[in-house]
Image (tube, rainbow, N blue to C red):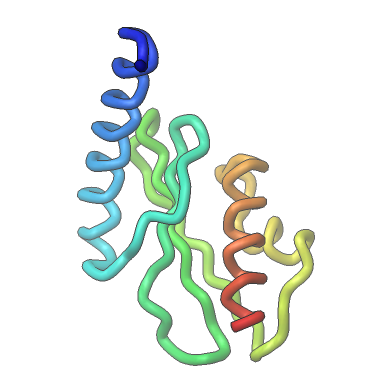
Length: 108
């Protein structure tokens, strides 16, 4: 059985994800939640073509959404390249999630 603190934490996380999803859907209606890392929530966006992956990272603390466009040309990108594309506003944990998701998408 879950204790009060665990239930409260899950509720706060769910509310935070819902808030982030609402903000991201202003840019991309079909974005899907990938993962959460503190106040940053990673969403996979609509893919414009087979050579590009789009990710949206929404920070609920700043209420800003950062768009990460991976123009990979059909090849898996290195972690450094993904980090550079993400920029300094995206946390290391969120960059790692984007990179991991990108690699799994490329292996399919």
